[in-house]
Amino acid sequence: MVTGLGVVSAAGWGVDALRTALRSGRTAIGPFDVFDHTRQRTHVAGEVPPPTHPPDVPGWSRLARSDRFAIAAAVEALERRNLSYAATDAADDAGKAASPHSLSSRVGVYFGSSTGGLLETEQYYDALVDPQGTPRRAWLASHHLSAPAESVARALGISGPVETISSACASATLAIAQALDAVASGEVDIALTGGADCLATTTYTGFNALRSVDEAPCRPFREGRAGLSLGEGAAVLVLEREQDVLARGGTPLAVLLGGGSTCDAAHMTAPHAAGEWAAAAIEAALVDAGLTTTDIDYVNAHGTGTPLNDAAEQAALARVFGDRSSAIPIEATKAIVGHLLGAAGAVEAAAVVLALAEGVLHPVPVADGDRTLAVDLVERAPRPASHLRTALSVSLGFGGANAAIVLGRWSA
View 1 (spheres, one colour):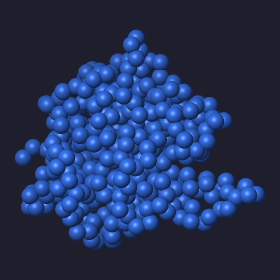
View 2 (cartoon, one colour):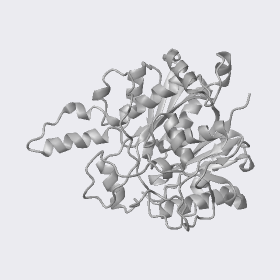
View 3 (tube, helix red, strand yellow):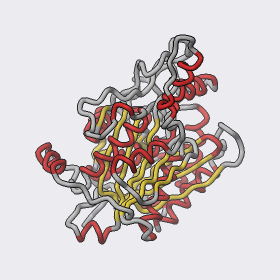
View 4 (cartoon, one colour):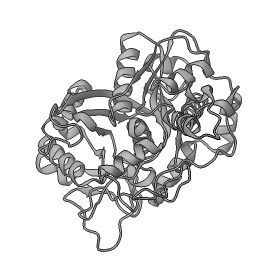
């Protein structure tokens, strides 16, 4: 069961900011200043704005950017774990005043990340080669990819398993599936799962060198799409067993039903054009969830906006759903907050939880006359969908990493 949710994204700090952005259909991708990009080919990204009220965490000012995102999302997820998403601001305040579940060795952290503290590593290197610079070794403290998950454990006093998956853009989705297994098997009673990544010069330059970045905010599943838009942030889901949630009088937000993964085993960056192994990952997730293709009511697609990826994903969906693939509603969260790389699947899972809990599908901006591929892309305005029962979230990464999870609407 998903019982808590926390998010940091280009839309702002918190779930409410993400909800507002998703429903607005307006992109949060635009000019940014995390680092100097004047010499780059493109100049837009999904940058997280400064926090209005940073969490009361010791040493906050010394934390790496991605560690801050991870901790803030985890704190919010724990604070909200007893609340319904129909809650009022007053209820939110009451929930924040209550003590979260006592953390112990029966709690685990399962995260995805692809950059860790790379931004601060670059800062160290720049100071190192600058004759007037003063490199600080503390900037290297979060260099390793496991830093966001470990920072959450330290900040919250979690002494159970702390595990990081780094498998490109499929990382967070794989971590969420791993957390599901850990809770279901009894390895832990509570799992904090998701991912965190931040913008960095190295990744921005790399994707620009590959000509994979659009000069404007990305346009998933549009015929004129020209590339992705990088983003940053974090999302954390709290997972618990159903009997434990009901025993304490809690109300689940959604049900995490299953996950699956495969690898194209073909190319370092390009997806398998026919979508064969992406389809196999989706089918594995359905088997794990005990569902069939007819049970899926909508898809939150990987939807990067690159010519190759969107075409391959469309092919994969056609393999799985057949003729129905053009009629299943599709969300493309990256059009709103950008591509969070290793954390992308986490913020997209959060979007799915919101859609299921509230019965609303989130639109993406589409310009007049901009033709869409043969998919039912939710566009321009929120689409009421009180009938939603189950949803599929897909993540497809470099190296041919494919992952999918299935989530369901909670009903007592």
